[in-house]
Image (tube, rainbow, N blue to C red; front, side):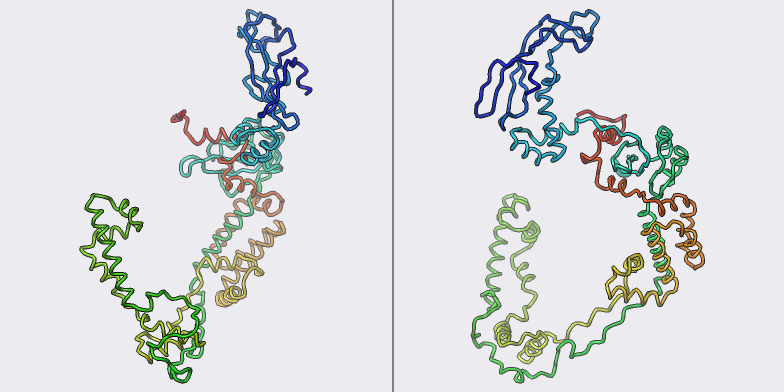
Length: 538
């Protein structure tokens, strides 16, 4: 125990809870923390309980006797001060620095519950809340020199409070949070950091202005995901403008042979039919409720249950109980309880429940017999039932009329890589492109732009924009106009390996509610979320 060199051990005891050590400090004089003057004048003594590192897997508690001393310097603001043992005690702490460092390491590696389980196994009983609290109390590591900066905005409270997050793109660590998302705040911050050489951002005009004013020496790099999204919006407008060119899918020809319906089937051609009241032989494989075989019995059960439930609901209602209480006592839904409560009589409810005649109830034994005989074709069974009195129709429902693909579906086909399209989707897309030259040209331009993003060929951007202008595509022309206004940043985004994805991911993961944000920045986010003139301390 090298950190015990400054104490004198007086007694050691071992029990079921661990090891307890009684000790006192060896030093005769102690330096005042306010003025560094040593003093030996004792004011009082008291005991401190310090949890220390484990000994052979057993928790250790040090019962240390410390002194409170007078400061002999009259000019010192401290009149008395407590004795501290170097390497063993710190003010107000109940853990030694060695134990605190071990617990902090566990918290950094595993956080709450998992860290608490591991610490308990190692003989360091600690709660998950303590682990998180110790991690959040750690000092933030120094930021250092930032050469590549990521910028993005996020909503602290959507529609009311917004802020700007700054990331070091080489380490993907948040380094600062700025209130608001205007250009002036970011420009002032950038002016204080002339070491920045690359700024990754989205297509926001305020951030572009801030980067130009605050860091003219830096290269602005537009985010490639936002470029692709802007192109997708232009493609959607193009598809909407040419939606009349989208052909309707062809209706597949159907006939009676396809559906298996043969209206001219005589029942005796397939199997000799038994009368409806004949018993069914063999072991059935299709479970049928006993009451289903006799509709009259089922209706009697339904009537009896409805009358009993109606009487129970009316009785509870007469006692002044509400719908929620009635539903809970009778184990029924509140809507059911309300329907029984509002009905004039039980006959009204029974009439509604039995108004739909079960056409197949009388034919269930016959269907079971034919099913076990091997006839599993539904249209054939329907036709046979018509010969024995079934009033239903054997005509299959007409096939649903195919509809043309939706706008967003066509946009996704155009924006997707051809290898990621199914055979059916690719066939429909080729039919659409064959009917509309404008959409075919859009598909070619999207493919060329995707290759520029994938291969980082920003040097082809100027030729691509010229080819787009050669076609009659107003939506894509608007996209190209926006690119020309931010040409340097877009070209850098299609050339440099840097991208604003880590910044976007930090915002999307809800960093302001996670531990991933440094402690000082978490406090900044909290201060931004509540205006200064209406803060409340709870």
